[in-house]
Image 1 (cartoon, rainbow, N blue to C red):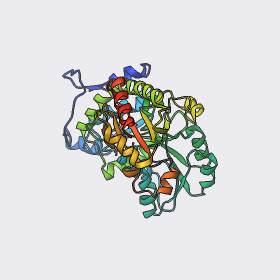
Image 2 (cartoon, rainbow, N blue to C red; image 1 turned 135 degrees about the vertical axis):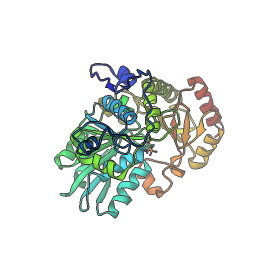
Image 3 (tube, protein in one colour; image 1 turned 90 degrees about the vertical axis):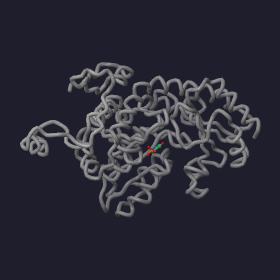
Image 4 (cartoon, helix red, strand yellow; image 1 turned 120 degrees about the vertical axis):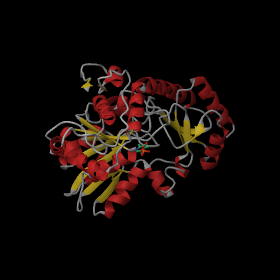
Length: 396
Ligand SMILES: *Cc1c(COP(=O)(O)O)cnc(C)c1O
């Protein structure tokens, strides 16, 4: 097989070509290797592969050509030396965090995390003797104060789900390194197009590829990215031995998703910007948060850290839960779902779904009021989306 790799090509070109390995058949499309294992030419060859003295594949829990192609394309996109794909975004977050710590260590994480990520650091890690302190991610002093001698890893997500608050990645990376700890960034909301955490000083980036990378509602997937040293010494053994492996079929779907990632995300962002501008002073909303608008409370940091807005908008509907529910139920085109980043526009009421398990005070700390509706903007015509939103707001 031959591998295509040229770091000089621009992002859109690499999204389509990077990492492709062609078999002697010369197929146009990336080949899908649905196989659990691989045949060795001889007993000697099997021995050498197990000793890592001979290149090649042995078992799809360790590596697979289709999964390799996806990993190489992701690494190129992110500007990372290495990438490993996983079965879901949560498998990526869990593996990235668990593989960095052991009993007696301590983790500092931003409070405004995706619900399951928060469970991993707040509930799972402490069961194995790893302490965790949650901080207001926007408060740099809070990160500094949370550091202990045994602190090994920081975790944050920006823009945060669902309140779209922004954390200064470069500043937190500096604090983590002064503490001798690593920084892991969950980059799902920004996508690899709009934010490059490694270039800002982070040590590890994680994705739920389920979101914009697939972007068409088909399969789950995740990715962990970092330096070769980080991936090979910290993460690789954990993944190989515990097996949260992605199916080659899903890796293939995600590879095809990457080909259209920039087209989709740019159009979805343009639609989101249009809707945010059209609705920002709507009388039925107490607030509208959109990272692409100059009235975002952290617009200056966004300009420094991100190269684009977002496909996500947070709408705070006047009248709390009842009003938010009336609004959502009155939508006809935009559907209710907890997914995001999809070609189809979707709304979620975080307080009663993704963040239901948190007490109201904890939700308030994360900036999640009962009126907040998270809107993931899709690829429909923007005027159809606006008409649906305006019509539903009128019914509140
Ligand atoms: C969806 C999501 C995850 C989890 O990803 P899955 O693919 O559903 O396991 C983690 N972090 C963020 C920010 C997400 O949006």
